[in-house]
Image (cartoon, rainbow, N blue to C red; front, side, top):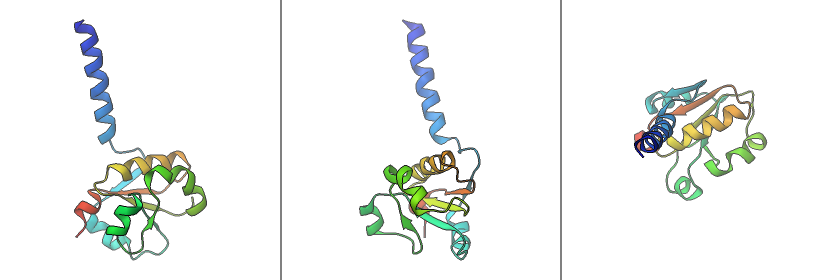
Length: 120
């Protein structure tokens, strides 16, 4: 029985660690750095929060593509050749979105650490 508990513990630990490890090939920036990036019109800015969250408060220049739709909408609404900067409420959903975008062939993906919670 102890062996089973160790295996379960190990699997849970691996799952938790994977959620916090930065995605390979994804740049992470702070909200202070984002303020500079917003001036660059060659970049694409995507907010992956729900439509309701986006309507409640968002940064001008960001397009709302909720996380659950990113796989279907990214190819239609974003250019693979341009950098994509993603944000959410805390940085967790945008990290997931960044991972999805990398898998879809987007080479320049940036995640905003801390998300809207850190935006001032």
